[in-house]
Image (tube, rainbow, N blue to C red; front, side):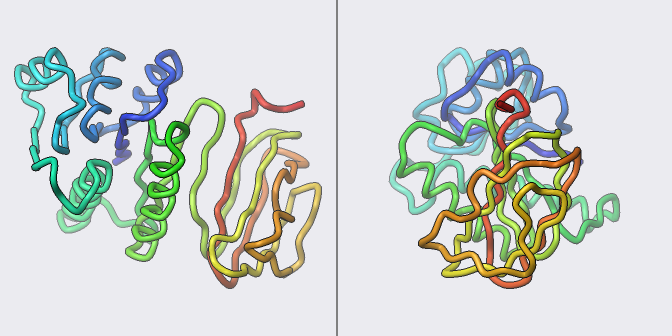
Length: 225
């Protein structure tokens, strides 16, 4: 089951319409419901204080049977955090039912890159909290995709595509294969941007983070220069 949570951030309608077609469940974080409806899809759930949800979006969601979870504006959690929690519970329910069993459970997060820097930083730290619970949240936009990595991960890309490996802990021990600038169990430090703008040699690569946590940022193949 592929689940996407759609936030109320920067949104490319053409890209979004194509991207939304690849998911089984669509969860809207408040105004993210506007993006989904305007792309001619219906969210399975609409979560948040709903202050950014357009009246037309709300009416469509009600008519189509969207689960609407309304919260007060004065709350400790952001709308996005509540929507991610809802998505995580759906995955856990699937596991209990025996229809899904993954070591790492993935949630795709759309519409959460760009815009206010405080929102972006808060979203990045949300990724770390969910990773500790076994959920990998992959933030996607038309120009880039990013996620946190602990352990080994296989990256699929294209020759010349750029990828960055950035420690979010004080340091990270990293090994790579298939990238122009190789790392052999080397230490990347948080205060040094050494891991930025590496390049795919072919169509796949391996990044292994044996100590610490690293942010993986893959630029879109359209950004190959």
